[in-house]
Length: 180
Image 1 (cartoon, one colour):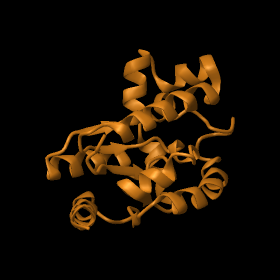
Image 2 (cartoon, one colour; image 1 turned 90 degrees about the vertical axis):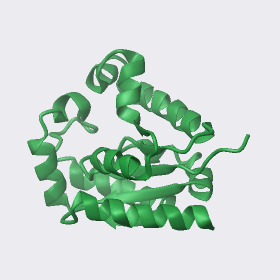
Image 3 (cartoon, helix red, strand yellow; image 1 turned 45 degrees about the vertical axis):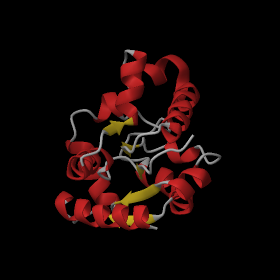
């Protein structure tokens, strides 16, 4: 099966994967899929309830299955992954080779401010470590940074860059990647 080139947006929570993904998909006239929302829709409950019922391990199994499914879809898509999707390291070398994988970054203060100002943080972003969501940013990000770096074709810092500017950068990167 030949699959169309997709754009996978990876990065820590609140780095802009969903908002940039929606704008990028609209700009490229491609479908957009937010993996966390897709998992919630399929399960019929929020991520917090999924994690409460089965733990992060059960959620990660669903996430890994969805990631593999999306990689095999024939259509081009813009996909906002969950922040922990990068933990499925067996999948990322193939995704990186066949698709555009973009690591969206932001500094710690920006991530904390975005999480604090998002009313959906508690339902969509339950604690990963049992600490307060803000307290776990630095240690979890330090653990995942090497995985994000290894999995990505390019990196874009969203700390102070407007969504429209990031979208234009990614349109150019996508067009370049499909021309190769």
